[in-house]
Image (cartoon, rainbow, N blue to C red; front, side, top):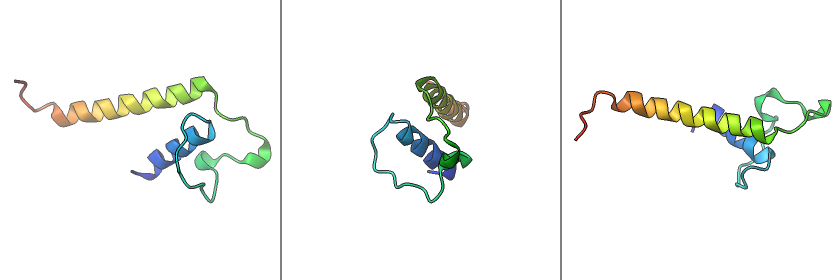
Length: 71
């Protein structure tokens, strides 16, 4: 897992979408500053992030297998 994936998971945890044992970061992910009373992510924003990740992983998988022959 890279840093971006970890931050995405932390954002999803903060939004209440997942219940996982992810340690809290020394700083808030994505440069968010809780002292400025920023609102938590909405369901639509979390869904958009999830769909973006699925698209990203699907495109990587397609590129990795594009030279393979189908049976």
